[in-house]
Image (cartoon, rainbow, N blue to C red; front, side):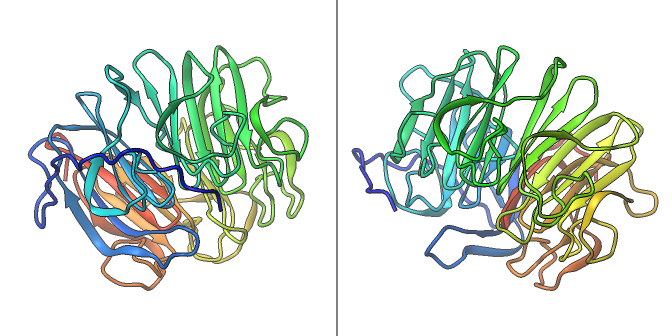
Length: 389
């Protein structure tokens, strides 16, 4: 554990928690539980609960211990555990039901946050000038600041021109000017630099080829990159076949190409501890594939077997998926009409169906969604008037 250097107190900004109904404009609904080391699961919600904000929500993002909502006016709000400064408001207090505003320097407006996903007890955001900001635990040096110090308010990181970023566990990935850099823990090769040596300074990910990286994803000790040519490469932990190349228990410190029968349109990685960890993707044809840990039915094939190679899974009859997400051992999809389906582990309400029994098949849990993000045991969706039912 690192010592807490707590800055001056900051007042909580107004944000109304609604018991019924979503915001008249884009808002959020969330369920599951917040997790952090040494504390019991907090704010367990077995069904979706809406939150309201002082302006429409533009983007959402999750970490194991907290959640984030970027508003259309460029302000960012956070809620959940705050013991490592991950709420970014200068405090180390928790705030589970009342979002607080993240304290950026005057004039900084945020343009985006990673949806898949945030590092452990740590958060990331990109401002409208392309600069990256980070705050929170930084236990493994994932903020690339040459240290492991906790930051209770955002600090500017040594990158500019960022077009993609992701983090999970103790590491983070940053794409800038055509190169991908990584920082943090590297016990399973998740930094992708050919070593298993951790680093609090940026190291280049090697072996991605010449194609442009369009999307970065991350999980507990895994990383992945979707290229503009539709290829997907991943690296890191392989205890349950997370690499998708037919191996098990053989981590890779360099990117490996996952053998898929077509170009990848979208991809999501999940996993929060050794023993889970899975990837879901959609091809440009609309076909769905998953690989990795399957003990909790999270691969969507109705089985509990792990899959070291990509396996096909299907949506319910008559449903077409548009978005995918996966957390610790639970997976999610949003249909073309905005319906949210969940399947997999449910001990902490991750499925959102009101119970705690694992979902073997997709369960309809919400409607009206335009975005979804999930990490560890928590999940949230963005909802708005424009989404279908």
